[in-house]
Length: 417
Image (cartoon, rainbow, N blue to C red; front, top):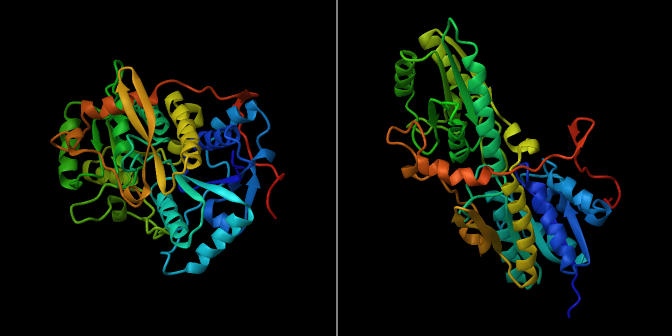
């Protein structure tokens, strides 16, 4: 049997409440398959370029640590938003990366992330092939936005959807208690950029004892602010409390983000993504001035991706599963691929891992099908809800200490200088 060398793993992009479960899956599978060391990049590929990494055996000492890691939100290793240049634009960066990988005797490079992270896997695997390097490069899916192509869904989405559904119910209950002699409109802003998967998850709040949101607006369809105003006026004729869910990324027909109508910063990340925020605040102010009733805006913001106390068991288990599957695929010779989740059955829900060429995934976006939105563009259909429901099932109770969740955090042992 050949002697196996080392694995290095990194985390990139916006964190999720289950991203560390994928990290745990990589670590456990690597040890089970006989890899010598498992290194973690500190702050992804950007940290690796600065030679910042850690031997994970200095951080994870027991099964309890594995369980804590699976329940710890945010990126345990630290994340980044760093775009590698095209190979022909800056060969020196790639040569530096591979010099570091060779020095650490890395056999497998695993990156946990979304669309932009898969771009990193694509470029590194392409460079390795052209230059004759033997390292294997595998992507592990991660994004609450659920917009990665070819996978049924992404780890992180189910838990975020669970949090959004539960929180929407709570916002609705809160609003109903304040409308005895007055009308109130509540606008909930949900993450997701150009894909409406998370915003659609507010429909989960529609249950036996809750009406759910009155209107849901996804970014897949142009937003007509005049029709929106008329719809609100119609609803106010029959009810006092109105709750509307909007995506942070809804756009007007001319392509402008609604949030750009208000006061929004000019920050753009390395991949050219504008910072999207203030959509709900703008619409609440607009309705207040047009109608004159009380309005309120609610941004779930980073809680959508960090609320590990609301993580679903299905999501944590699948995140762990795809991490382990990436190690297995690389160990068996795959490179330039991303692990995907295939839905095997809806009732009972079952899933399995598959693997696809990362060139078919990187820099692509998966959107909510038009048939999963009603004709008017103001709500999602039963098909959408049926798709999401299995992903929010079950709980992973936090390990509590003095009434609060315990998390695993990096210590100074094993960190590179």
